[in-house]
Image (cartoon, rainbow, N blue to C red; front, side):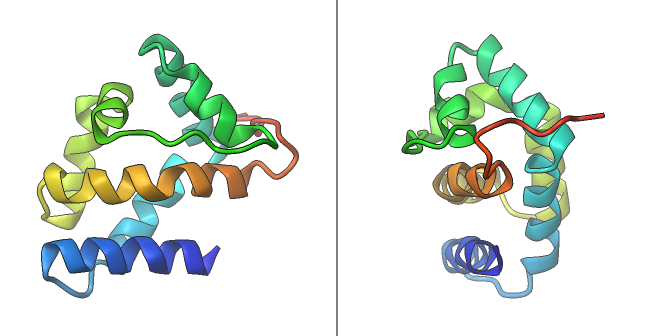
Length: 119
């Protein structure tokens, strides 16, 4: 899992031209890939008509890619604002990196092909 986070951090740091964002981004990605986070993400994706994307990440097959626009339609304004507030970076910098790494992060947190219990 460390390699995935390192890749995300390197990508965002390159895009932002800043170093030292690791802890903030790790925390937010960890929140999105927690049992509650995956449950919320799946529900939000269903509402946005993109449930097939998140289900592919949870399942054992190939992960479907997600575009920045699709990711933006899944995440709430509050989720995006929290990420922007925590990192100090604009959404236009963070969302492309998140779109690249979130499918693999969710996949790694659901090795059995089932969403974890959010309880």
